[in-house]
Image (cartoon, rainbow, N blue to C red; front, side):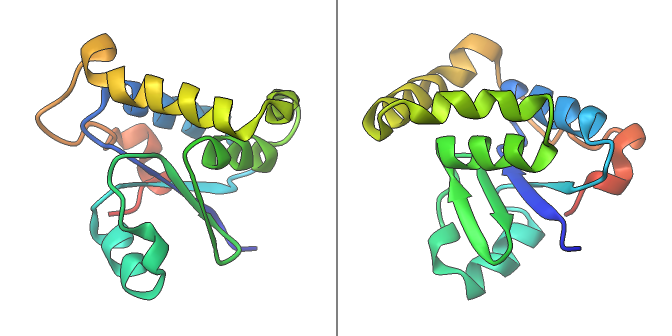
Length: 131
């Protein structure tokens, strides 16, 4: 079975926390994590032209790229129960979801901070990480 790849901003403390949490709860080993703009992302961008943005979470699964809130919803769907309960928020209007996502994404550095280097490389989660 193909693993889903979650692309994150590796300098973002919020994104780092998300990646660590996802790696810890992914007991069925369905996800891999890679930095936006990293080697894996760059190679995929050559074949999938819809992966050029470095400002939002992306998830690649079954030859489809999901971005922003859609990436988050697809991720919880893949993780399954009990996280799939968060899919109830998918009933919110598309415009609202993007406004909320962009508001959090636009403030993530001021709220949570920014690192000068990639911090997702914890040895504990090494098998989940892609370059």
